Image (cartoon, rainbow, N blue to C red):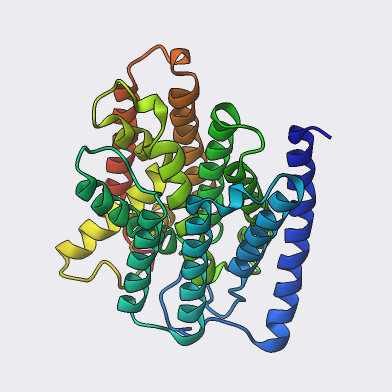
Length: 351
C-alpha cells in the first residue's frame, strides 16, 4: 500500500470514528449533564448545550499519533518539535477543559497560553523571521497567545471557528503535500484534526446540537498556531522576499480570525473595556445585526477565509500562477478587515 493510499484510508476511517465519537458525546453529555460551568457567559445561543467537541479533537489527535507510529515509524515522533507539539496541545486542551468545568479566571488561561509558547520555543518550534532570536521568541509567544484567544473568541456563534479553522488546515495540508514527504508526521496529524473538525461541523452547524467548548477552542488554537508557524511563517517561499512577506502570507491565511480579534480589541479598548470580557460585539454578531441569518454569516466567513487561504497556498506552492503582485492581494485582505470593522460601527443590535 502506497503512502498516499494510507493517508486517504486514514482520513476516511478517522472521519467515521470522529463522527461516532461526537455522536456518543452528544448523547452522553445529556445523560450526565456535562455542560459549561459558566452558563451566564455571553454567547449568541444557549450555553446549556454539550461542550465536549474538543474531547474528540484531542482523542483523534492522539489517535493520529498512534497511527503514524503504526504505519510509518516512531523515530519521527521522538523529534523535539513533535514531542513539543504533543505537550503544548495537551496543556492547551487540559487548560480549556478546566475552564469549562470550573470557570477559571482569564489569568489562568493566559498563564498556560504562555507556557504553550515556551514549550514550543524549547522544542525548536518558533517563528524565524528576525535576525534577533529574542524578537523571534517574543513574536512566537505573541502568536500562540493571539491565535489561542482568537479562535476562542471567534467561537461565539454556531460553526464559525469550526469552519474557518477547517479552511486553514485544508491549506496546511495542500502546502505539506507539495513541500514535504507524503509520509510526513505533520501531514498525518493535520489530516486527523481536519477529519475531527469536519465531522464536528455536522453537529455544530446552525442550529447546533453541540459546542466545542474551551477544551476544543484552546486545543485547536494551539494546534493551528503550531502548523501556522510550520507552513506559513517559516515557509521557504519567503526566501528572497522582504521581511514583511511571511507576515503577509500568514495574514492572508488567518484573515477572518485576525480581523475579528482586531475589531473586538479596538472597539472594547475604545469603550474602556477589557478585550477578554465576553460580549455580543464580534464581527459575527454585527453581520447578524446587518440582516444576515446565522447560517449565512458562517458561509460568508468560511468563503472569505477559504479564498484568502487558497491565495496564500498558491503564493507558497506555485507563485507564478498569480499574475499580479502579492501585495495587491494583501491590500484586498486588509480591505476585508476594514470592511468587517466598519460594519461594527454602522450596524446596531436588533430590538
